[in-house]
Image (cartoon, rainbow, N blue to C red):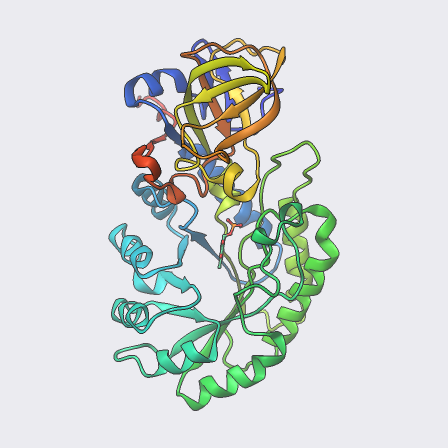
Amino acid sequence: MSGLPGDALGEGPFGLELDGAPLAPLAARLGTPLYVYGGHTLRRRFAALRQALGHAGRPAQIRYAMKANRYGPVLDRVRAEGDLRIDACSPREVERALQHGFEPHEVSLTAGMLSNRDLATVARYGVRPNLDTFSALRRWAATPDRGAAIGLRLNPEVSVGWGQEPKLAYGNSKFGFDQAALPAAVAEARALGLVVEEVHMHLGWGLQRGQADLLRQAFSRLAALAGTIDTLRTVNVGGGLGWPHRRQDDPLPLDAWGALVGEALAPLDPAIAVACEPGTYVAAAAGVLVVEVNTVETRQSGRWVGVDAGHGINVFAAHYGIPLITVPVRGPRRAPTEVIHLAGNINEANDIFARDLPLPEVAEGDLLAFWPAGAYGASMASDHCLRGRPAEVLVEPPRPAAR
Ligand SMILES: Cc1ncc(COP(=O)(O)O)c(C=O)c1O
């Protein structure tokens, strides 16, 4: 419906809907705070990604970054797509992917600062790691029952991502071999009996259209380095595509990203596959967080609206400074009539979802939906202050009636 952020959201007789499922009855049945995910939107996002990667003119692999959302029914939906793989970032994520039907060769592990215990577990599961230190190379080579194939993760060496926020940019961060060190890493891997099948680069969270030149530079360097490795099978361009959170956000469009990737990789042998690891692009827009207003109070500092969730349920505002878009669940849609501060229920001063937020008048007992909340929401939730964990549900559109 027009005026609503995200095409997964609409409005029906019961107010706000996600993928056609009314949120108020779901909240009444399952309680709040509640994450609702739309299976139809997940499928549409994967379909769009397939199409964008198709333009690269080479085999393509989409590896869902399950750290974004590891809810069992979401993983089952990803598995049901048939051609999708998983990128995991810990041994337990690997384990969970295998429990949801993915084969070891369909799962990769991309993580830093791995312990010997982590490496041993990954080796036991038969999963291929993307490594990013000489230390991990040597310790993986010494791990019993490990496979020979590995990927090497590179430092993007450019700073890109949402809001120039250092927490969200991966250039010169704790991740990745320096690009100048790649030949030495490849030589070391060979000497240790390992086979470098992939080079990997994840640039940042929330890539913006205005950063296209830096992305072009990073992907071109990735491709040039890839071209020097004769055992290479895949070039992995990571994740990073996102959604607008503020009026001034201008996310890199999917097609522009696909064109940049295709252009940068064009000089490489067409048998070399392109892989990507989307988390946010597929999961964020497919999810909302539904919370209940429990407090409306005017103080000298302004009008405060309190809800039954805090940064233990969603870390975006408090940890990253990223606002989620707030939409009242009760219909019909109304224009903002007041400016409020939206606060969570954790006993810390930073537990504020938004300041000076224009909103239609809300009453205690009303429901609010936060969007896009399907990625890094429940998967990053904690039980801080013993406030408990959120409920989750996946809604699927009704199947057409059988004739
Ligand atoms: C290695 C790696 N791949 C993929 C992703 C997914 O990124 P996004 O959610 O921005 O698509 C991340 C996110 O942190 C990551 O670290």
